[in-house]
Image (cartoon, rainbow, N blue to C red; front, side, top):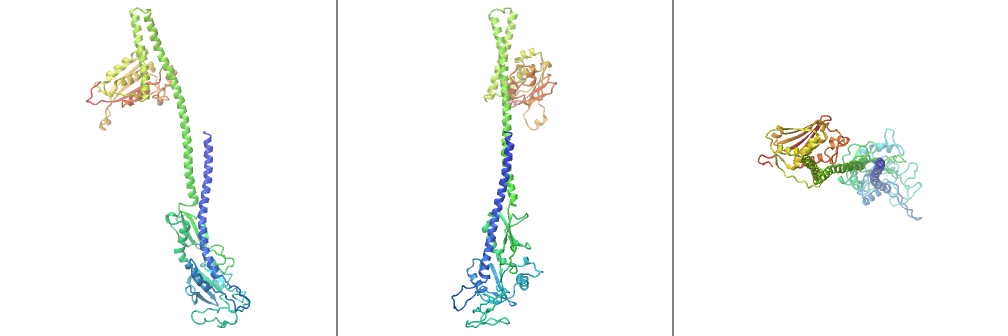
Length: 581
């Protein structure tokens, strides 16, 4: 399992990288599709106008002998387009250039009128004068304003519009500017008003349609942006439209901020419509649409998604690793606990077998009359008493632990006299202390107040500490029992209950520092006891800690290897109104 986790991590990271690239491509493709659709709609509307109005169109051929053929001039088509177009405001003016004069077509009447070029088309006029197919060297074609230019009469075809050699009757050119015949340029003649045959007059040299860029940026483009990218807060993209040559802003859907665009598309790019002096058409559109996501670039958004996926995936793998580590630790602890329980069973069996054997042997000797001398009878009686107490102590300790583990331990808290409790514990351990050869020294303060505790439980705790000192620290030959009040002034100022300390101190070899963290665990026996093969169950200190926690106190340990050990029981002092048990 440990070997599999790195492989899983590598596979997941690789998969997340592929997902990131796929997400980035998907987001970028969606933005590009919307940008292309917006550009296509703009150019489609302009293209329809160019093809329907600007490109020369002849009337269908009439049967032989028909009176003639008519060609529809740009102004007439412009007038018709205005009546049917969905975006009639798309073109703000239609101008024709002929023989050095400029005429403007009226959208309301379809008639021509003399006009001056708008100021923003002055540069375009210079390009006209330079002739089709070229522009003056001082003029950069890409800087000219976008205008649709159509050559209505190619210079190398003198027959003119609708075609060379056509001598059918044509519409009068130049057209009238209101009532009456329109003035003629020098060297030209009107055909007969009655429509008889006459020389075909040449139509305008060039026609120019000027898109209404202000209206587009103010009304039409915002509508298209809302349609293809969403409206306001619902949109996940910023859209900017700017001029391709000078990068002047035409439209912004919001605060662009920093960063490059994710996708772009060209606007006003209609082959043959713009830059009529350039037969190949513009290499790129006059406008550029730029799109970027509001949350940042597509790469940044995809990276954030990847980081979240990596974090989630890494968290799952880390959780698996932690669970595996916890499982390993739990297995080790379970193995150690099982071993400790086996040692406990072996220790208890030995501890029980010894007093049972002694009691059985002594009883048989007394019953069979083998021991009859009064001194020997007394000795046998004392042996039976001590072993019985020892056996009772082990049984009580095991039952107490079972009760604590099952949650059935209950303590009757009442004022307990400390000196009397210590005397009771010493009496219970008298045989073991005498057997160890240790000497017990008492150092009790006078007038000790009673503590709030359970008498039998407290006797058991003190007796357990005395037994451990006699069993494990017999080499010190000295056990000291102290009892005193805690004189901590800080507790008194903080109005905390006063505490009383009961210390059991020995001068034995001390406790190995490696054993200290586990000393109060059930069934745990230190290295010193195992090395010296000292019998025991490993329940004593675990019981002491559990009992002290139940009494509202605590147990503390101070030890140093080779300098003995001190166990301290910390108990709350009983209230003054309570009476000792």
